[in-house]
Amino acid sequence: MAECDGICSGCAEQEQGSCSGEQGKKASELNQIKHVVAVMSGKGGVGKSTVTALLAVAFRKRGFKVGILDADITGPSIPKLFGLSGNPQGTEMGILPIRSKEGIEVMSINLLLQNEDEPVIWRGPIISGAIKQFYEEVIWGDLDYLFVDLPPGTGDAPLTVLQTLPLDGVVIVSSPQDLAMMVVKKAVKMAEKMDIPLLGIVENMSFMECPGCSKKIYPFGEGKTKQLSEDLNVPMLGIIPLQTDISGYGDEGKIEESASVNFLNIDVLIDKS
Image (cartoon, rainbow, N blue to C red; front, side, top):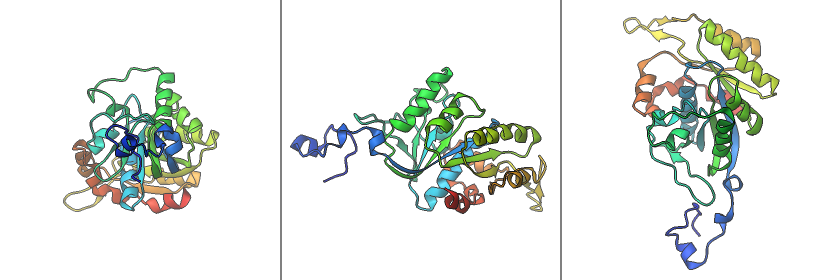
């Protein structure tokens, strides 16, 4: 008997009366998600979505079944990074996510919009409801890891994820500027107050390599995020440089081809989750 995908139209088993009855179930009853990890940063513009994408790619390359829930409802960028478009198909059981080239399941509000640059002008409660729907009404299937890309700040959307989703913990993303670090600490304290484990920290846009001598240049200073990880007793998951590889592949929707995934030490995250 073939595995039910929730689409009855044209199904031989449905027509022959041998349907297994899976269509009567809800998405939440079908999903088997082993680990849910939120990627968080109180500060916008630090590359949180890019880090989320790279983490998903790194885990997928290890053979894990991976999904990304884009919880940044008003500023979604995950589909762009993966070059995804088209409307997810709905069934009686729920919504089917869009699959990337390498097999990463993705759900984002941008996949439901007619134009990718169309604004989502919603108030907090509606945004929170959409995030819950993306978790409960999407047919994620069997996943080893579901990464949740959070919007910046400590408002309704992050609060919804931290309160309602069965999180294993959060990964914190920062850049080395003092301003970024100050705001990121707010997100850290939010997670701590809600008893959500801190799984690790990623420093993005850390350094540049001189094309002539390969010397590392630290435009925002060196060692600040490492000091934060030591103060919090939370491991560093990676230090990602400023380089055209990331922005280029991201702009082209080919983030899965970026070599920058090698800057992440996911063994630490696998051990902790």
